[in-house]
Amino acid sequence: MIITQDEYNVVKQTNRYLHMKINLLNYKFQIVDELSGTLVGDPTFTVNADSDMRRTCAFSLVPTDASFDIKNGNKIWMDKYVQIYIGIENSRTDDITYSNQGIYMVHNPNSTYSATNNTVTIQGIDLMAKLTGLRNGNLEGLPYLIEQGSNVREAVIACLKEAGFDRYVVEEYEITTPYDIKIDVGGTVYNILTELRDILPNYQMYFDVDGIFHFEQIPSGNNEQIFIDDDIWKRTLIDYSKSIDFTEVKNYIEVFGKTHDITNYGDKATIEGNIYKITVEGLLNLRDYVKIGFISTEPLSNPMLKVNDFNEYPILNEDGTIPELAEGEQYYVVKFKEYEDSTEENLKGYFEFMGNVQPHAIAQEENPESPFYVNGRLGIIRIVLSGGEYDNIYTDALAQERANWELYTRCKLQDSITLNCLPIYWIEVNKVISITLPNKQGNEETNLYIIKNVNTTYGVTGTQSIQCMRYYPYYSNYVRNLKGA
Image (cartoon, rainbow, N blue to C red; front, top):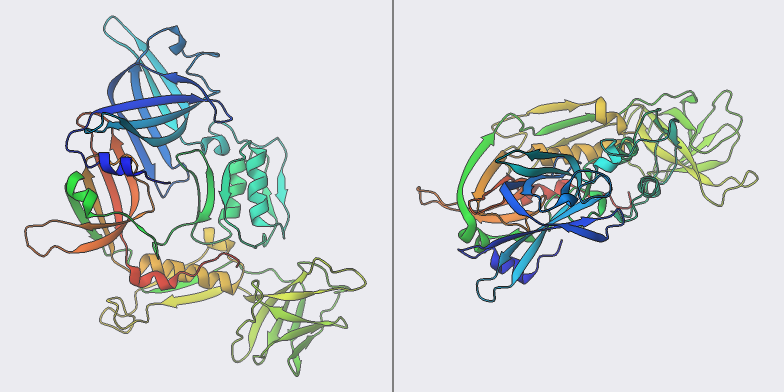
């Protein structure tokens, strides 16, 4: 989202002359008409970073002619999107500078007529409704399957095309589905996308103000550009409230993934050089994605695994790095992965290191300078996470990624503020802001926050409520970029 200099300038004006422009779009995002009339009441807009259905709005207007009747072929019908712009007149040039408020589907419109009232009320819902089944997105009456080993990015794009969307930003990363994804009869495209998203921690999907679908990592705030600073807040801030929640603070995170069901068990391995050797009864040939369990008695550098009389193959992490194996007896699980040029006569591949029979990882605050240091005055404040969404974790490496992410989100004060201000119509969630909060104690300090929720009321007396979480740059080193993982 690019903010123009004119948008930035007009939001600082003391006096505002407001305008609202509503375009009607077809499903190809082409402008086919507009809604014009006298607004009644104050339109509202919400943006929630923690919801896949990110944007909603509501407004009422006085219809000007019969084209506002709610029926097929008219302006207000199910075959159109609504794109809304809020404009502020430039006090110097009288030009109107518009800010895009998003593209919505018309939801449950209501027409009211009486001797004293003639209005049409429209609720706008996020385009995600076209994937969830709320408006569309229901799959054909058949079960759907995305096979184990499918490229996640390609699967996401295929789902979007199935739903009729060809405008998207899906991050580039080479990761495959670790298991079959099965969607029963009656499922939706959204069900599939949710399963794909939850393979990795801290990922999000949403539609932006231009109706473009995004599938990407949630910004941690690390190295993010400051979106809004005191230059804006000094002109727009009315008041604020601040709260701190101690209950969510945890400095010791333990994550358990899904237990592997292993039928090919090789018992305790013998060692020759850097090769683990095991025998698996009944395993007649190696094949793609077959899982094998064995017991290691000592860690090896550059480890290889030889099963039965098959060739030995290297043991590698999913990203191609060499795993760090633990001392003593360890029950490990590996999965055979064939290379693309592998053939039945010339089998090529490697054993992907899955880790323990149940993926497990620990992350703890080990920095003595942190107020939540595990060996400090607070001691250990533990949380154990398992089941539910954590059953999507299928390797020790992913368990560690998730533990690191949980530590990043929990090992800090749940310090939040709610800003009440004059509307900033181009504001966006998951952006870092810098603000100096005024107070009567005279100990003002400038801190960073991440915007999580925005509620805007449009009108002469309209205001904007912005909920933000404190951003601690110090913790960002816990979060490793997962691209290419």
